[in-house]
Image (cartoon, rainbow, N blue to C red; front, side, top):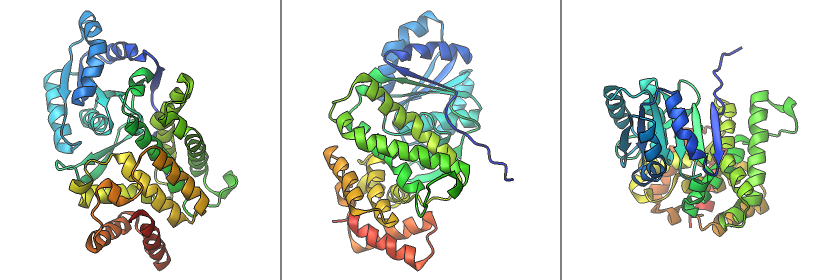
Amino acid sequence: MERIPLKVGVGKYFYGKGCIEELTKEIIRFGGKPLVIGGISSTEIILNRCRDEWKTSHIQVHIIKHSGECSVNWAEKYVKEGLAAGCTVVVGIGGGKCIDLAKAAATIGRWNVITVPTSAATCVATSAVCVMYDDQGRTDHSIAMNQEVDVAIVDTEIIAAAPRRTLAAGIMDSVAKLVEVKHKLHISSYKDCGLRQYIGYINAKGIYDFLLGEGKNAYEGNCTDDQYSDLFMTNLLHTSVVSGFCSGATQMALAHALYDALRKWFIDDTREAMHGELVAIGVLLQMRFNGDPYWEIKRVRELMERMHMPVYLEDAGFVSTAENKKVLIEEIVKITGLESQKDMDSLICAFHDIVR
């Protein structure tokens, strides 16, 4: 049997209003000298809540407010700063790029890591992979962490204050898991595939059903605190559990391949679009490629429209020339490894659904 290290979940997952209070205790548990890496505004949000307590607890903090890309160059630079300052733990604050950067620095420097997301736009706070870019923002490669994230602190009051756009992006990034996992699968029980894949599939379906049912109400603010807490947990934790179980499994991740291709070749055109917004367009591409029924694709598209998301590539800034479309399709083929003529024809047909 192949020996595969299964990295699923997070050491501790704090959630609820005011749970940012747990951050100080966790920092002290890991030596009391944090290297804080976060976005400019998001770091201030957390500092405003923790600064006095850190001072009282004699926490020696080295703060880096990052506005660049999530690149290996930046991660290595911050590792040197953290080592020079005698830091004992990394704290990542903010959104996807800053938290992935903090996770990468922790992996390279062999520190423990605490994540403090300030939006529910991706599952980065609990995933065991760091998605890296080059210094210009183009997709580069991924770094596998040495172990799972040690602690994630999800203060639902802070998350709820984030722009609704981030919530919509996170909803669709999570919805993508099912359509990517189920490519060409016909699963009715655990006997139809390996158990890991079945666990991933069943969880992805649960996420899909929940978010298609509750996403619109959440976006429009028509949810209770408990429902928001469930949704944040879905985007921030449950989705990364699916990724953990499906790591290395057979799947055709066209939705994320579209994102990677756009970030590689059309970064300037699509820079203003969020990760989840580009993946959402990819969900429509994947569903058509998978042969999902028209009514189900329409259901997903309508949710995206109700959340004021782009549904065509042009809405996200892509310039739809014949040459650009050719480059994009060729890169998707390269990323996914499509080989058969049937799959190529299906991809081209599906692609017509996401361009005007």
